[in-house]
Image 1: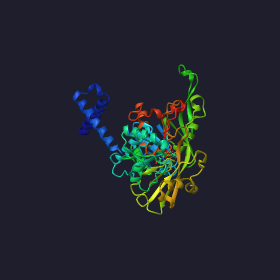
Image 2 (image 1 turned 90 degrees about the horizontal axis):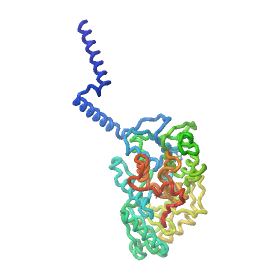
Image 3 (image 1 turned 60 degrees about the vertical axis):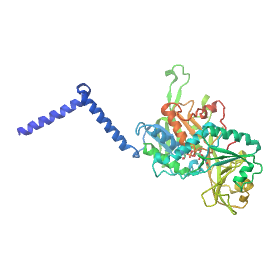
Length: 481
Ligand SMILES: Cc1cc2nc3c(=O)[nH]c(=O)nc-3n(C[C@H](O)[C@H](O)[C@H](O)COP(=O)(O)OP(=O)(O)OC[C@H]3O[C@@H](n4cnc5c(N)ncnc54)[C@H](O)[C@@H]3O)c2cc1C
């Protein structure tokens, strides 16, 4: 009995002492104990981070608040989510990616032909695509041995008529200055190198010598999405149908003349039709061809002042045809060829199949209410160009075809990257028209830099910001599709 009492008293003394010690640590600890405690707690924290590293977040419940909301989980949205999480700790902030179609079957990313080239005229586009190549080259190092996008290295061949020859030379120089490798070939050199080609009307061609090719865009999207989830992003299946605003009254801000409506909540339609709201601090619009519509629900384009300027991004349907030629096809070394008319073709696999496409004239833009393919467009518009450039394509059989929506920027056909000039908590990563998949890694990294560091750190994309729309300063590619 006595023994029990002594034991109980001792235990209770020890518990009290340890509790007391925890509360008054800073006052009572001796320096050696304190150093030891800090080191051991740091080690424990490091171990718990290592344990959590790459562990998928098992949060399935829909939160009512997220620090960062990304609208659209295609290549851009998933890249933004991946990079924001990659550049910070696993649990530094909540990040929700909102995606209305988790099959990704109709988004631009999945229906893209996955071309990667440095043959642009704008330094920003060249730099982003160079990084796109670098990202793909080091994909396994970053995401593990199973990360595979089946990159086929192959140069682009951009052909120019007499009229465009000088510009082609200028473009090739800018590309080389920035680290791309290419060669200018005259008509005779083109004929020697590509005997199947009809060089009538061709003055020069610029052939990419490295860091160009094509890859599987769907795989890239899923690698980025998986990477984002493993680092703590949460994907929610639902459609952003509206936004709500928090009113900041002008009377509370010196010099402010009007109340400021700060976007603070997204209204989401879930797959079962239920409407829910999520509050957010920051929102990134990466909704591809739907981005203009998302802008409207934020009054971008329908409001006053700066808000009169819309996000000029809309759907434009583009057809891709897969065909086989009846005669001896251009060899395996046939490049991704871009005709001066804008028509392009490249081999598809090693079995003699090719794919080709052409943007229609503006007055013939197809209906965008569906993804139906117009086979007459091939017969009437595309095939005559192909057959002229490669006479072996005189007899071809179309095996299959598909169409997809370009996230088309009607202002200047280039990405809009950065924060909105009126809403400081709204960012944009949209409008890449025909070249977004190759730029997704660079754009995600750029948006993460902007949000986390307040400025672009690797590639300066300031000129591709929304301000160019306000200033009416288009950033057009010169003579490049
Ligand atoms: C036929 C074709 C060929 C192409 N070829 C090339 C090429 O060779 N090289 C190249 O670099 N690029 C190419 N592109 C362009 C490239 O595919 C796109 O620029 C890029 O994929 C855009 O990615 P994104 O994530 O912005 O858009 P998307 O892939 O369209 O993703 C946007 C996502 O947002 C979701 N979303 C939209 N609205 C909402 C909403 N309200 N709520 C929730 N989610 C929403 C959509 O469901 C979609 O999944 C091609 C495109 C097409 C169509």
